[in-house]
Length: 448
Image (cartoon, rainbow, N blue to C red; front, top):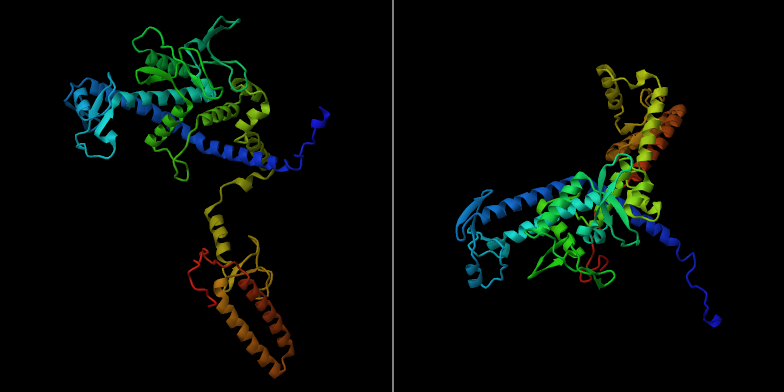
């Protein structure tokens, strides 16, 4: 088999750019979390409000006889009948509540404006809320969340106090590591709502099979929590359906980034935000890694190293120590006279040809010979005025030479050389050329 051995064609120099690429990718991820973390409370409130509004609308429609109109939140709707649906050639689901919008008159291009399935809307609003709650409280991967079953709940009794703590068993997924998570009060309420919603009038959760797109196998029929009606049966939710629900929720809530663009929440963003908030709240990194199911602490640090809390806190402590060493009167509030004096100093910097760059609290050291002074910051707008001064100096030099004032000639020539230098500084300043234009091939050449 020795003849099959070959030298690896890829060496360390070929992979030198990978480090830079990984750092850039990590930087983009951290910036994304910085933008999404402040928006998470708005998303949570929007999920809860949307679910409540959809439930109220469904209850109001269900209490209305078919064919009758009702008003909810200022909108008048009419309870539809299944016979009407058949005559219009639309596919309907038995047991669902449909309403028509009399204001549209059936002429809208959007089907949801003419006829709405309130049962489906309420179901989607509920699952959007449930997914947000479970994802943000567990920090689990989307595959792990969708694999939660009714059998995933276990109890742990503390040996010291005997208190029973509910735990969530996460099945092995990416790293083939099983782990247990503590179920907090808010997460317990969410799971109770999910079980009640899925079970309905049945005593037990329906058994469904789930297709694992990563391993490409169908699981045995299990009481999955995240399942929904599909056709005449039920099916386990997929990752694409979860992403679709999150996108609909963000669109309904009109949540945007700082730049005004629509926000985009992926299921894995909740995991990164969970890790960031856990580390920022003081949870040790190795404990956070255990909760997230990471094999290496370095992986958790890439998740949570979004806000450099240590750098910020140590820098603030350094500033506090430095201020303690300085005289206390330096940090007192300035009086009105001191503030006026401060503003007046900068007002006195304005000169004929620009501004003076001397330090605050210092006087002019060059007896106001601004043309010769290196502290003069020439203003490009005064180019014409400086040219007039140079022309005047030329005339005075000629006059002094004719009259034999040789000492005056030397002084005027020194002033003229300094003025020429200031004029050169004005000409070297940046000029706005505007945006470049792309010339078409059909346009005539400027040299033609």
